[in-house]
Amino acid sequence: MYLILGLGNPGPRYELTRHNMGFLVIDTLAEKYRIKLNQHQHQALSGRGEIEGCPVVISKAMTYMNKSGVAAKALLRALDIPPERMIVVHDEIDLPLGKIKRKFKGGNAGHGGIGSIIEKLGTGEFARSRIGVGRPEDGGEVVDYVLSSFTDEEIPQVNEILEEAVRGIEETLKELNKKSQQTEEQPE
Image (cartoon, helix red, strand yellow):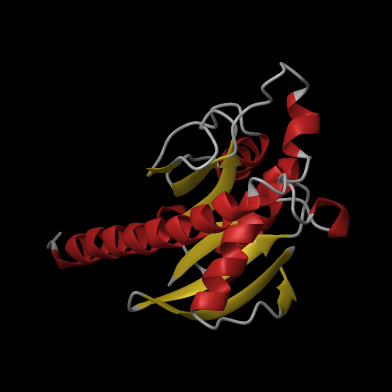
């Protein structure tokens, strides 16, 4: 079993903001694989299904971004999944809009949601799908920028980004599953 956790802020006020890119990707993934996000538990909205032959739980943390570790820890514990079998999907201001990077472990790079997860789990040993949203061009406040909605001009590009992010998650799942199978096959 794998956990794919999207980060964002709950509520209609934040629905289409840059900071909710993780939620938008989870919604796209759920739609593609017909996974209903209808289980409200462990401070998350979740659904179960299968992606690339792997059993998965896809979730949106229903905590605010900087408390994402609470939901991540509760989900992993309830599902009895180690952090190495989790993919966290989140916005990334250090990447331009449209750039997506996969990462398999590391620090928080200044991201409050990732920092919360690392703090609560005591490890950075989990995969991430970092979805670029860029920085404010005018040197404005980062908080205001990430909590702003995408412009009408950006929406077509955002739709393409969501599809590309889903493909990246599929690839990450395949890689994690391959690593997991290799580990299980090695004798002790």
